[in-house]
Length: 70
Image (cartoon, rainbow, N blue to C red; front, side, top):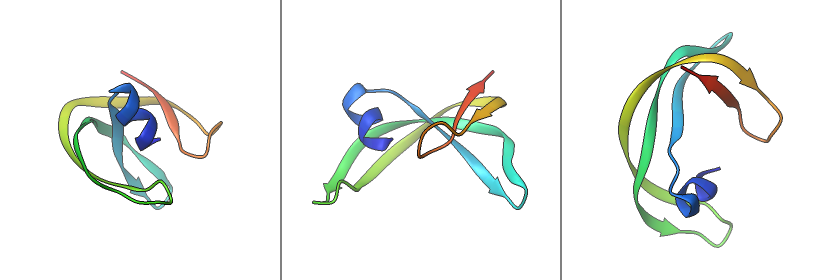
């Protein structure tokens, strides 16, 4: 997901994990820079928080959660 966001210059959402799911409020983040790229595809990144959002609906269609947000 992070690699997709980095190459597409797209923000991603950050939400707090809870025992029974995820928080209802999160923050979009922009990748400012990639510090290090590892051979297995992992990245060390520096991000900036941009704006608050409310999670409306969660989808588990991919390997990571996606959501409709307001």
